[in-house]
Image (tube, rainbow, N blue to C red):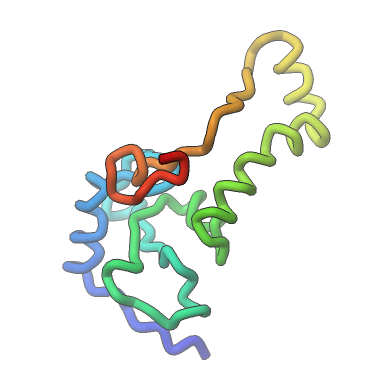
Length: 122
C-alpha cells in the first residue's frame, strides 16, 4: 500500500496554472482531462506531496519520467536519437530521406523555457 493522498482539485488547478496548462516537460497543451500531476522528486523517495514538489505533465511524459530526476530524464532524452537510429529502420530511412532531423542542442524543458525551473544550461 502506497498511502498516497488524493491531490485536491484546487491544488491540481494551481499546479497547472503555473505552467499555463502545459506539460512541464514537452509543453503540450493540457486540459483538466489530460492533466497529470507529477512529483518532481519521486514520491517514493520523499513521500512529499507539497505543492512545490508537484508539476503539470502529460501522460506520456509522466509515464516516461517515472522515478527519474529531472536531470536523469534529460539524459535519457539525449539518448533517444542514437537508440532510434540503432533500433528503427523507419527512423534510419526517415533520416536518409531528410524527413526528420536530429537536434544536437541541450534538452530544455518547457518549465525551464518559461522560467519556472532553472535551466540546466544556464
